[in-house]
Image (cartoon, rainbow, N blue to C red; front, top):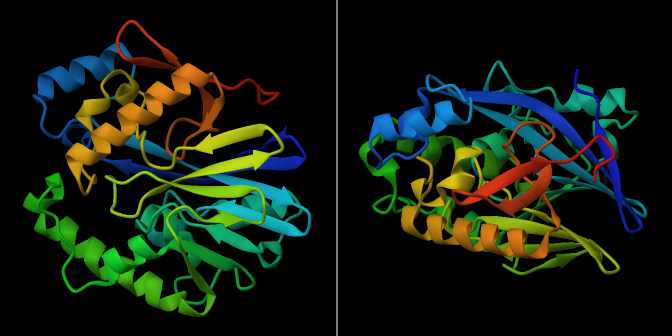
Length: 291
C-alpha cells in the first residue's frame, strides 16, 4: 500500500493518496490519436515509457481545512481490478471514509467518479457533499452528448460506456450532489478554474491559503509526453482542439510562475513543477518534503 505523501500549503495540511492505477492499451492511439503511430512510439521510447500500454496513476489529493476533509476526485474504485485502493489507504492513515466531508469532482469520467460507489450502488463516502460543475452535470445527463469534436466519435462502444455509466453514477449520488457555478469558491480554500476540452465542464482546482496556492490540473496531463507535445492530446478529450489549447495555456502559466502543480495521472505522487524544456516543457517531480 502506498504511504500518503504529506505536505503543507500555508495553514492547510495536504495529503496525496493512491487509488491504484488504470491501464489503457496500446499507448497509441490513447496518446496522440491523430499522430502517426511511429512518431508517438519514438517519443515515448525517448522518455523510457512503454508503447504497449498507457498506465495512468490515480492520485487523490486530500485537503484538511478546519473541520473539513476535502478530497479532489474519488478514484476509479471497483470499476477496474487495478484500482479501488483509496478507502484502505485512507483507513491506514487513520481517516475513515465516514470522516470525508467533501469531494470536489474535476469532471465526471468514471476514473474520477467510480470510487464514489460500492458495487451494490451504495455510497463509499456517505457523509460527503459531492461538488460538481453544473455544466459538467448537464453535459452528461443530456440524452446524447456531442462527440463530433472527439476521437471518441469513431469508437461507439467507448461512447456507449461513457454515456451509460456516467449518468448511472450521477443519479446514484443525487442525495449528496451539490452543483456549482464554473468559478465557485468553497470553504475559503478551494477555487474551481474552468478548463474545458477534456470534457465540457472539466475544471482545474486551485487550493489556496493566504498568498500560497497549488493548482490541481486534473486531466490536462495524462502522460509526461504531453508536456513535450501538448497538441497531441488524448483519445478521451471531448473537444480535442479546445483541450490542446487549454493544456498549452496551463503549461505556459505553470512554467512562468514556477509554482508546484498537482496532476491526477502522472506518476505517483503526481506533484511537481513544470519548466520550459528543449522540446516543449519538462516535469520536475516533487521531493519527499513536497518541495
